Image (cartoon, rainbow, N blue to C red; front, side):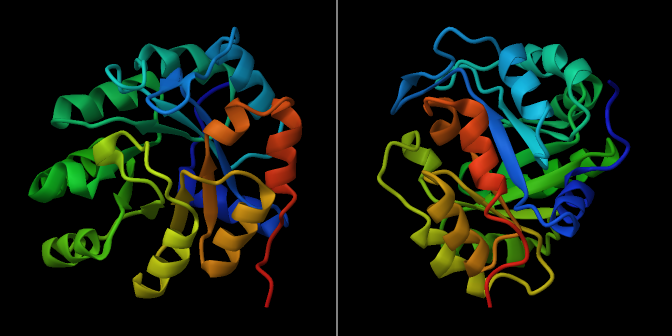
Length: 240
């Protein structure tokens, strides 16, 4: 398989049109809260499961210190899947964007409360490489930074947990429910982290999220495929 021509936004809209809840299924080696998440599996094993299902994309955590990731994971799974790949890391400059594109990434994570004003040049560098941006917020102050900089993210994400403390807090999807009302009406919204199963995914969807990103709940589920299927089956459009 080769890298998809379209990015994540187009993939999200395609899954919605098919009646699926758009799901980004994650590959993460470990987490500060849960420890080892591969549990004897390889990234390729997970990619094959995800790629056989109508997911909107695959998230790959490449941050090495706390999450045990590496950009080589993207290179290894890129030939196996035809959906967009999100790179989750803390980029430092334009070279990270070039490396991401060359590895087969379509969209990069930019976390407001980790990057501050540096997010503007990184956003521009990503677009210069033909990458989309997922700009991630956690609280209203992050939204104010985006507004002050005049950024127009391709995807606007809510991290239900606090990345500044390694996502070890007990955040839940209620953060998405509280924050989405303040988002621009045309934003493509992704709810991330602390989504334990279909009911949380349904709450995020009904609050205004266009898609959900789920990692730990999928990676720790007794049946990986069944968990992803249950999330997708939440469906689209939202309840009215």
